[in-house]
Image (cartoon, rainbow, N blue to C red; front, side):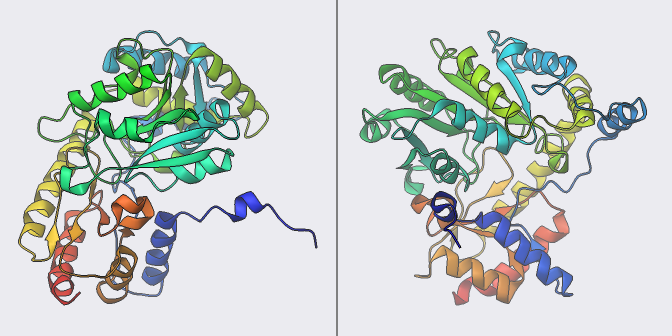
Length: 390
């Protein structure tokens, strides 16, 4: 038999998906597993969004939709960007609706990169960023952020990793896995380096509504001089508890949006028709549902941070947004992969090892708190028994 794709063979499977699946398999075998490996809200999709999808189906909206998104949803995204993000330069022709935010990220890279291009990735970073860059035959360049410095981005650090081949910088705020939200100074640093070196910036804003205390989300596309170089990826999975709907979107400078639209017509064609009706209902409808879910996440976050502070051997950085904690295990020489294995085998807690997010995440383990409080209470009880013996 002839050999298969060496490119795809070189890309590892998602560690998050693998750990989630291991947790599911143990649960199916009757084990009392707490699965905190994935970013899966435990809330059901709000009813008015579900109703919009059913109404669309009953009205016969089960045929091929426009590949780029229905006019209603494109208009809703444009209005949302103006209303919530102060991004007023985007037109419907610069938006592409996709089956999930993950595909929006992939297609943004596909429309931007050429072989030999370098992409700067702020580490720790979501597990799929680097593999997506590699699958588009470009080179990921990991910019390590130090946990000791609060995973802070600085102009000096960014300049250290820029090269003549650098084309794009990937940014995620609120951040998965660290929970960091970019400060004004960090935004200024990114803008300065991007403009000086003529870089595109791909900003993943999927967690923008999940903020705590006084944290504020600022879209980089709204910064002076950034409109023509910023690609925005967002979606409905996290804020609206719509993970299973697989609905996201890309808003980009016109030349990139044009190429991304072409790519979509020759690949997956479109997102599902009735999910677009649901997406428009989510953006145009009442937002109190988002606030209620975020309030619940805030309560869980406070519980975990307070509880983990009482367990020797754990050090938890502040969590300003998203729904993850990323504690560092300080009293063991075991790797994060080994720690995650022990937590699963001995504590029946499914997590994601920090090394999955890049070398800068080593020593840490990610826990999702987008789950019921009773699961988090069981997690803390088990950690209190396991951590001292690591």
